[in-house]
Length: 172
Image (cartoon, rainbow, N blue to C red; front, side, top):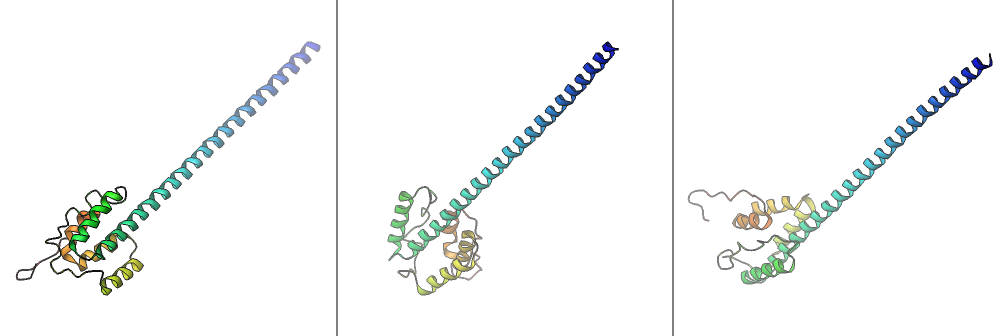
């Protein structure tokens, strides 16, 4: 009887050890899931931070480009506009397109040029800046209001604004 009791005792101990082993395996699986979830959370947070940083930089560059264009429009004459555009392009190569101002020809682009930013242009920029949601929207509206500079806006801001429509008999 003692061999039977010893054998039963050994079987019971073996069963307990199996249960302990199964419990340890379950704990390991839970820890692996936690680790995976932690890594995924860190990855998602990193992507969100990276996107926010990129978005803020794009916004800052857009604002800089608008300010540069505004500053150019406040110039005293076409030659000064061209010279400022070339200077800006060299001073701020990371913030302005490489072709910034290249399509601008001071001899032909501003036949009826008025020096400085007129009061109505200043007011237009204030209204557009306050109401438009993006740089592209401001440039698009400004291009529609000033069709002669649409090719220059397209080239400078790498956008595709519709070319100005001309009808037969209208002045170009």
